Image (cartoon, rainbow, N blue to C red):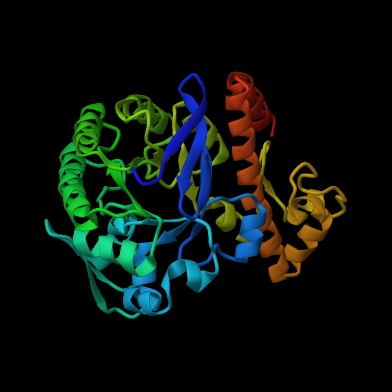
Length: 370
């Protein structure tokens, strides 16, 4: 375990701690802004860092297409390329195996993609996924290549994907080898079937990975089914290793998942919402283009230490979107990333102080009122 994971406090199943990497500490529970193509959309790295983010996520599929893995090597890796000196986690390309099903061919050895950019063909195997992430991109945390079907799906399809992912996990571990400055996370699959989740988790735990992700959720199963799956899955994972719920999500999903012992999250929602005029708050999403804000001089949230949250009125933000000004998208994206980091900081404090139950109760009441 190259990156020590120190759990500082517990409150029920929830934990707060620190994952110590060679590029800096990751305070958990942590939310990772998504930098799909080497950028958190609309924001500079300085703006992202100012929100309190300890780590960001990069996308293997998109980076292997543009600028390309070999070019990334020549340019010194993703950290240098985008000027981000903190940790980076890269997904494996497994999500695109599902989301770009019409552009790929899957077999037992790997997956062949037809580029959505220019139609060129690209091959991704467990071995090449390790090379691209670890050697060419230079990610600090590398994810195994996996496959998951969108839900709902027949049980036989979910089981087939789970078992294929298990085989790929073992191949990824061999290809990853022994590294001093990088970690490899496995991904638990199995849909919302408790028996399949158990098979996947127990097999991966036996292989002793550096961390464990829970994949294949937030893909159509619904909020309650997701939580039920976490109730089954997280107790099967090692207490001394980070747990990462992939692609989740809405603030209430994060809060409920932290209660169940999850340590790390990522989602495109903060910046995607920001580009479409939606600001996240404890009361839920706020649509800044609504006429009610046309003369509202209050800020989005004066309690968040972010200029976008604190220093601009809702009326001004409303005006920017109505006028089609790009600054509106930038400011709302910046606010949303800051809001998510503000939420994580409060969750960490609540766990450390033994008041998570009250925090969750208050948060749910505000969400319902909004």
